[in-house]
Image (cartoon, rainbow, N blue to C red; front, top):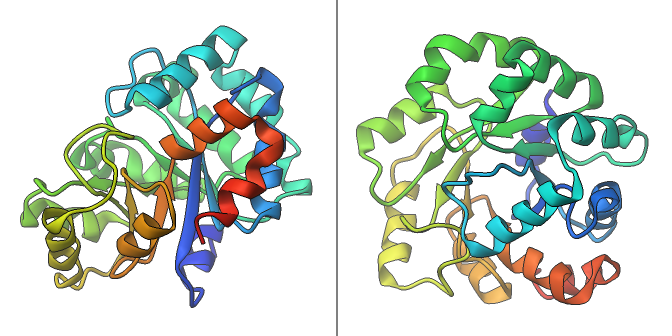
Length: 253
């Protein structure tokens, strides 16, 4: 069973952390992953930086720009992660845009992910219909779960199609804005959480965007299986360095 599905089966609310590979420094990637696991994080999203990150807010954009300047590439990331399964057991997901994966070669990218122990991918600019028609067979052959995003504006028809194609969890974006742009949840978001919960989808939902502390984590996971934190974590390591990761995680759960 894929590590993501094993984790989803646990009787707890899950905390997933997103960070940008190669940030703050190029060689920080592995240490960040190891420290996140040591501090009790359930899953990790490893951001593959891209020069045109359409879904990312200023904080993640800036970290991506810095990582690219540091020298981060797809090949460098794979090299950094080649021995990651000797020290890390929790699910690892690469989150990135489709262009760098196509440049690397889809088959080659998936094969490399399987080789080093990546469990899934989040590709915001890969439409579910395109994935289903052209790439699903390849991803599944290499044991990769592809995670799709929904927003408050996503139609019920599309959500149910995404649910039918999904074999892991659904990334439930808390708003229609970019990452890091909200600070808490109002009635609109909570109504959206309830609406999705009442759809009784087969795939669990994990909420992202706008989660930065214990209060927002608790609200996001009231009806969902877990929550994802990205911008707030990147701000923390920008301001405090990567030796204070435990302080951030203790403030969430």
